[in-house]
Length: 46
Image 1 (tube, rainbow, N blue to C red):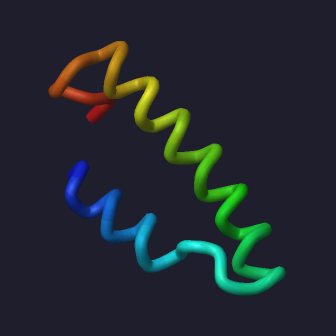
Image 2: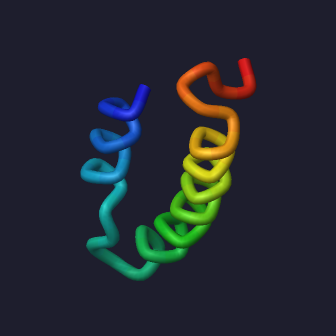
Protein backbone atom coordinates (compact mmCIF):
# COMPACT_ATOMS: atom_id res chain seq x y z
CA UNK A 1 0.00 0.00 0.00
CA UNK A 2 2.76 2.43 0.92
CA UNK A 3 4.55 1.55 -2.32
CA UNK A 4 1.47 2.42 -4.40
CA UNK A 5 1.08 5.69 -2.47
CA UNK A 6 4.63 6.64 -3.42
CA UNK A 7 3.90 5.78 -7.05
CA UNK A 8 0.79 7.98 -6.92
CA UNK A 9 2.88 10.81 -5.44
CA UNK A 10 5.38 10.51 -8.28
CA UNK A 11 2.62 10.32 -10.90
CA UNK A 12 0.68 13.31 -9.63
CA UNK A 13 3.67 15.48 -8.78
CA UNK A 14 2.85 19.11 -9.67
CA UNK A 15 3.95 20.12 -13.17
CA UNK A 16 1.36 22.80 -13.97
CA UNK A 17 -1.17 25.02 -12.25
CA UNK A 18 -4.06 22.54 -12.40
CA UNK A 19 -1.78 19.71 -11.33
CA UNK A 20 -0.59 21.73 -8.36
CA UNK A 21 -4.11 22.29 -7.02
CA UNK A 22 -4.83 18.58 -7.49
CA UNK A 23 -1.56 17.82 -5.69
CA UNK A 24 -2.63 19.95 -2.70
CA UNK A 25 -5.90 18.03 -2.38
CA UNK A 26 -4.16 14.69 -2.86
CA UNK A 27 -1.45 15.63 -0.36
CA UNK A 28 -3.99 16.51 2.36
CA UNK A 29 -5.76 13.21 1.70
CA UNK A 30 -2.48 11.32 1.94
CA UNK A 31 -1.66 13.15 5.19
CA UNK A 32 -4.94 11.93 6.70
CA UNK A 33 -4.25 8.40 5.44
CA UNK A 34 -0.68 8.47 6.75
CA UNK A 35 -1.82 9.76 10.14
CA UNK A 36 -4.39 6.99 10.41
CA UNK A 37 -1.67 4.49 9.50
CA UNK A 38 0.55 5.88 12.25
CA UNK A 39 -2.33 5.79 14.74
CA UNK A 40 -3.78 2.39 13.89
CA UNK A 41 -0.55 0.69 12.88
CA UNK A 42 -0.11 -1.69 9.96
CA UNK A 43 -3.71 -2.95 10.14
CA UNK A 44 -5.19 0.32 8.91
CA UNK A 45 -8.87 1.33 8.92
CA UNK A 46 -9.95 -1.60 6.70
